[in-house]
Amino acid sequence: MLNRNEKSEKMRRIYMDYAATTPVDSRAFEAMKPYFMTNFGNTMSLYSIGREAKRALEESREKVASLIRAKKNDIIFTGSATESNNLALKGFAFANKKKGKHIIISSIEHHCVLDSAHWLEKQGFEVTFLPVDKYGLIDPKQLEDHIRKDTILVSIMHANNEIGTIEPIKEIGKVCHDYDVCFHTDAAQSFGKIPIDVNKMNIDMLTANAHKMYGPKGVGTLFVRQGIKLDPLLHGGGHEFGLRSSTVNVAGIVGFGAVVDIAKKEMDSEAKRLSKLRDKLIEGILKIDNSYLNGHPTLRLPNNTNFWFAFIEGESLVLHLDMKGVAASTGSACSSESLEPSHVLMVIGLKPEQAHGSLRLTLGKQNKNADIDYVLEVLPRIVENLRKISPFKK
Image (tube, rainbow, N blue to C red):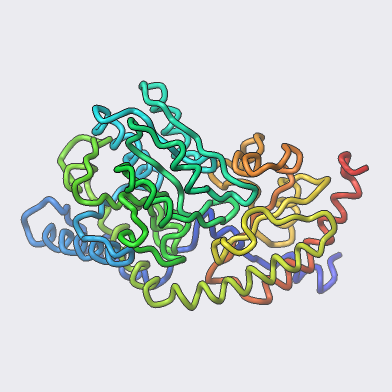
């Protein structure tokens, strides 16, 4: 029979996997409701319900553009960040292949970028995969050394989805522009969390989505600076300036616009709050013997922590934390069922057995100081118990 403390632990539910997805903000949910059942029209229709849907679409486009200081008509709505990244890489590569067939990406990109690049290799393009340092940082000078006369595109993520490291995007973009190379960044993890200005940061294309910032799933965006040519992936009715044919997900896009409005008001204060919780979590976890922080100690997202623990496996940590009511992840959530070690952790220098011992805890609006205290209470005991039965511990 459980005592009172054990019952309390069992019933507790703490979500710490905000890098995987987020709950929809209730304010965004309310904004979306009319576009499911009342203002449900097709944006391509001429009658009033269609015009109302079109108006809502364009208002949301303006909101998303304003968050990154972009022009309204440079915002393309898609179905996900994955689709946006595919459109950026494949669409640009095929539209500009007469200029050259060399593309540069970082070695720690999300799989949708990596896999798009590998697919382009099969179509006759050449891809350079830039290395990073032990913190996951790209060296702009090294990027410059790899740019060639036939280089047409560079794609470097703004902040890594696993280890949270923030790249020197402004400097990277400047290198690209100095050599007249298009620069794309995957900002799915940073959009709405830290400031982005596509002009000051020399960004030509930028990927983001709604569900990583308390909006609905199934909505993404691609900023495409005016004058950049892309071949569409989808052909049909010519929606989204001919770049993304498909009946528009108006309700989802309205939700996207709503969370952007919220981010404008709350991003700075929330980043400061989360940074304090993040730093407390890092400090506490690093007190555990043989525990190590992955990613840059300071140049990281305000909500991201990632560790590896010697002698144990991350899957066991996640399962035992789940039994204590804490939702966490090991490696990227999109591929967390894979038995392969994280490519990001391997690239920054971890051995396979070290990468398998990783734990990612990412914070969000629902997390409070008490949640950090609780994790710092239960995690050391979980690590200790797993090490007692670990075949890896000498």
